[in-house]
Amino acid sequence: MIDVLLVLNLGIIGYRNHAAKLISYIEERSDCKINFIYHPTKQLEDKRFTNNFSDLYSCDAVVISSPNHTHFEYIKKLTKNYNGYIFCEKPPVTNYNELEKLNNLPSNQKQRIFFDFVFRFSNLNDLIKKEICSEELGQIIHVDIFSSKGLAFKKEYAGSWRADGKNNLHNILDAYTIHYVDLINLHLGKIDKSFYLPSLVSKKGTSYDTSYVVLRYENDVTLSIFNSYSTPLINEISIIGTNGHLTIRNNQLLIHSPRDTFDKDGLFTDPPINRSLNFNLSEDGENSLRKSLDFFINKVQTKEEIPIEYFDTSVTTNRIILQCKELGNKN
Image (cartoon, rainbow, N blue to C red):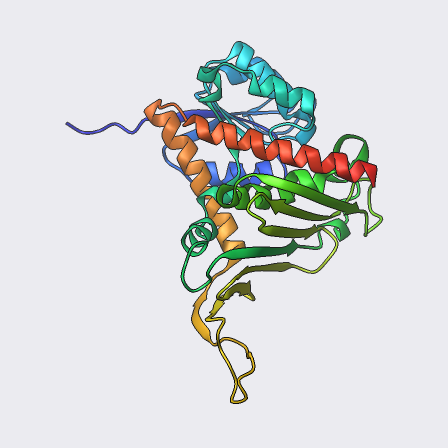
């Protein structure tokens, strides 16, 4: 018997920027196609384009890749009138009221919703999982993350939803920093204290374009995350342990170990490079997005429930981001 390929019918909310990237990834696949591209008001010359939200109800799955503040309203509409699967970009929601309503959804609905925290499927996640208790690094005591680019200086940025301080004041936190918080939370447990300093460096638009977050976990590990839309491209990570340290910089991963490395006078000196390999953080992020989409589409094809842990962890990460916003609003 010849297996017949089941082609899934997908709908997507959004059509530019990240939504355009998701559309291109989906269009590369032979196991699914986009039937509808929804926008509430826009008219485009694409036969798939629609302003009728109910058109999405005929799809096997709906992808939400619209401005952050619209996510919950679309999820609410879909969970009320639709029985298919939902793939939603981060953050799930942008305020506590929406978060509690989201968290109060029945379990059967939660297990059809998938939030796109791409680092969960990354090589970086696998690396941290492996090294966090390794003999080379010893006990982890601090993690530094620098990830930024010059998006705020592109001509179209000032008029985009990202730069709209009225609806997306903390967009840099919601769209960028949230991924790294989610990644590290997978490995370090509960947060004890948090600190957040946002700023508008470029003076383009009215939302913050730069974010600095410091977290301390209950096990005393500290984490600092710097993200910005106002710098040259930077992708660097440093993990410091009691016996060594790991750095990823300029697409190269280096592990220096052991701690007890001395010069001829018996003084501490730089540990030797114990391991070196190529590691492209930008490529890893792109590949992780594809893996995230692969995971979701597989669940839709097999009609399996999405493990509830994915939903619960997304809510936890979202809550931490909202707590950071409170701190930022007080500063």
